[in-house]
Length: 107
Image 1 (tube, rainbow, N blue to C red):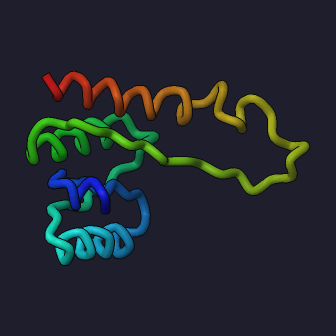
Image 2: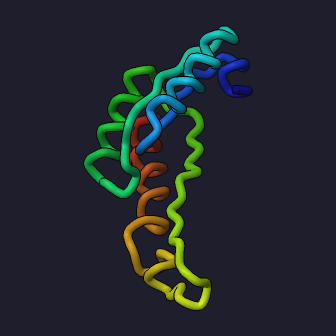
Image 3: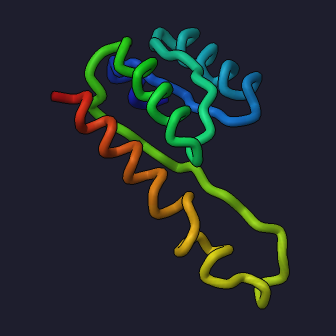
């Protein structure tokens, strides 16, 4: 909300809950801000590229906040390196892919 209050156009990215994302956008616009909701699965390279393309239609990306997370509902003793993501596709690749794509579109 603060970014929108300062004049930023805000993109709310969601994977599952369109209604919640659109509610945030509605609140932004009610308060005089500007934003859109875009569906994207951050574990998908194609969807990440599509989200960045849609985002850059609003203009240059100045700030990128990626707070996506995956959670496994297993006993703590069952959590190994792969489940933690150190050997998997999500934590290591997705945020850096977001930031790399954003940076290349900021120029």
